[in-house]
Image (cartoon, rainbow over all chains, first blue to last red; front, side, top):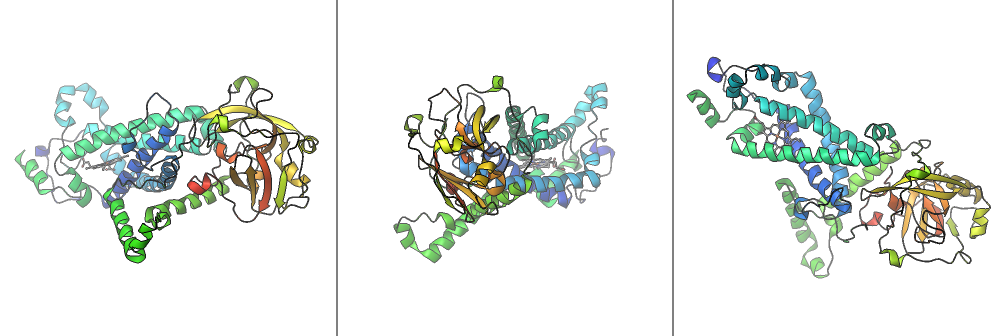
Length: 218
Length: 253
Ligand code: HEM
C-alpha cells in the first residue's frame, strides 16, 4: 500500500529516516559490491563468455591473479555484511516497513493516481520504484552468492552446482547476475547523486535542511 | 587461451578514497623508514604494501577454509565418452609449440623426501600397478572448463607402493618444462587423484603431459602438473610456479 502525500500527514523532520545499522551495512556493502564487480570484470576478461571484454580501466586487480585475490578476499566482507543486513532487515521489520509494501496491485488498479506517488521522494520512505529495485538487487546478490559458490567449489558444493545446471551454466548465471548488479549500481548511484540530500542523509540518518524545506513547501 | 602472465603484483589501482589513503600512508611510511635508497636499488617493495599484505593474508585464510571444506570422499562428477571435449584445449605458461617432448623409453620418475623406496621408476614399472581411467571436468582458473579422459594409477596406491609418509603435509611435483606445483596430502589421497599414463588427444600426442601427469579433479587445472619428472613428499609447503605469483595455493574445486 502506498502512503498518503506528505501534506496529508504529519512528518517529524528530525526523526531518523535511515537506521544506523542500515547506514553502516549499506556503505560497507557499497564498497564490497563495487570491488566484487570490478574484480569480477577482470576475471571475466581472462576467459570471456561473449565476444567482448571489459575495458581494463574499469577493472580491479591488474591481472588475473590480482583480480582473483581481490574477489576471494572481498567476498567475505560482502557475505558477512550481507548476512548481518538481511538478519536486521528481516527481524527488525525494516524490510516489511520499507520495501515489501510494493503496492503493485493497487498501482495497477489506478495507475494515474499512483503516478503521483511513484516518484515521490524525500519523506524518509522509499518510492515504489526504489522498493522494487532494492528487493531486486538483494535477490540478485543472493543469486550471485549461490552461483559464485557453485563456481568456487563445483565438487564440494555439487548440489548447488547441479541446481545451477552444472559448472558451465553457473558461469552464465553468475555473469548475468553481475550485469544486473552493474546496471543497478549505475541507476542507483546516478539517482542518488541527482536527488539532492539523499547521500548525505544516508550518512547522517536524518533529512537534510534542504529536504525539509522542500517538504514544507509542498 | 593462455593465462595472462604479466608478472606484476596485483594492481592497486585504488577505486575508493579509503584505499588511496591507506596506500598513501603506507607509501609515506615506506619512504620514511626505508628511504630513497631502496627505490634507487630497484626494489619494488612489493611486500611492504599494506593492500598486498591483506590480500596475501586473505589468500592464506582461504587455503584454510578450503582445506576445511574439502571432504576426502566427495567425488567429482564423471561424464560419458560422448561428453568429452574434442579437441581438448592445450594450456600452459608458454605457447603450445614449446611443450617439451620427453623420451618415454629413457624416462625415469625421480622420488625424494619422506618416501621409503626412493628408487626412480620407469614407465613400465608404473604400468605394472593397478590402472583405472576416468572422465572428469578440468576447470581452469581462467574460468573455462573442458571434459577429458585420463587413465593411470590411483595416486593413493602409488603413494602406498613407494612407502610415502602419508602423515606428511604436502606432495610436490617438478616438471620437464620447469613448472612446479604442490598439493595437500588430503587431496593426494583422494580416490580420484590419478598418476596419469594415458592422456586425452590422439595416440602419440605428447602435449597433454606425456609421459606423466597428475590429474586432480578436485583442483583447478594449474594444480594438475604435466610432464612430471619428480615427486617429493615434505612438511614444508613447496608452493608453485603460479602460486608464488599470487594465485591461491589450495585452489580446490
Ligand atoms: C557509491 C555507491 C552508492 C551510493 C552513492 C548509494 C546511495 C544510496 C542512498 C542515498 C540510499 C538511500 C536512498 C533514499 O534515501 O531514498 C541508498 C539505499 C540503498 N542502497 Fe545504495 N548506494 C551505493 C551503492 C549501493 C550498492 C552497490 C548497493 C547494492 C549492491 C546498494 C543498495 C542499496 C539498498 C538495498 C538500499 C536500501 C537500504 C535500506 O534501507 O535497507 N547501494 N543507497
